[in-house]
Image (tube, rainbow, N blue to C red; front, side):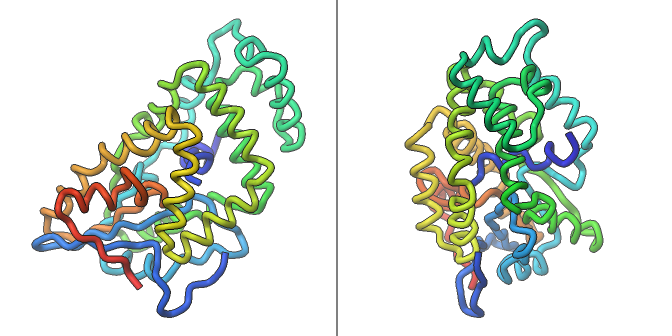
Length: 289
């Protein structure tokens, strides 16, 4: 499964240049003795336009530690791939067609054919796993690369610079929201993934453009649209995880080291976003220019 395991969220998280005085996708919160930089990430970027905004460079330079959703610098790819295969494979004797019905199965076959994926493999995977596989392949076809994503670029830097890394959760915790979906919601997620394929290029351009501009209002609007369409999916994948991360971020603010926290951009903004949760707890976040 290779790099798929470290980039699975690209199916869920959902170009231009920053002027010298434009806002960036980074907010800083000051504790008594420290600064915590909250940086919004896009997990995949166009290979021909993958430079990071200056605000991210500034936050990284001023931090002694990089904290991500999961610690990609320490992720064992073989172990993670095995875990995903174990939990993303249907029980023996179960076939995808039986779970999703003829209509949806026909859509999966058509999408797989267009993207060059084998139904021999997909026939034995869970619907949520197939949704991720289809989306990932579609991103690659559209010219978006996980290896050029924000986290992968920053991991390369910390490994060269010898900085410390950390994670807000484990892979198992990150994927738990998908595994816990009801069979009906898993099928619905698969259908939504296929519905999104036709507008993937324009949707990603919109997300990446808003991210580069540090346009919190636009990112919040995008999240609101997705959340309203499928709250059973987005609450465990976004809101619940934000609530689980909040105490860790507040603990960083009571420390003595500057820390850069990088999470998917849609985790920062909107109702239930980390910026709102921190504001409710009395912290002031200032957007970097």
